[in-house]
Amino acid sequence: MVNNLFVQSASVAGTARTSIWSQIDEQVMKDAAILPGIYQKTLLYRSPRLTNVYVQAFYGMYNYAVLGVSS
Image (cartoon, rainbow, N blue to C red):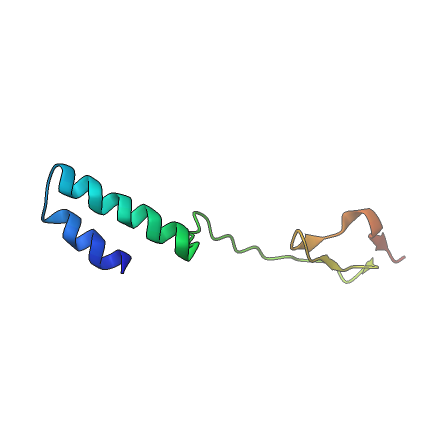
């Protein structure tokens, strides 16, 4: 539906365009649509000497507070 409204808004001007953009705003809020601005991909390397290593799910990275090193 939103895509169709975008197409319609390109073919009109003035108050008609404003009305269509209001409809787009309402539909996006109803759909709770989001557009991610950033997609980050990270490589986590660890030395084989590290101990007590796990990934903190919330941050998607190692929990540095509990790391250890084997001798």
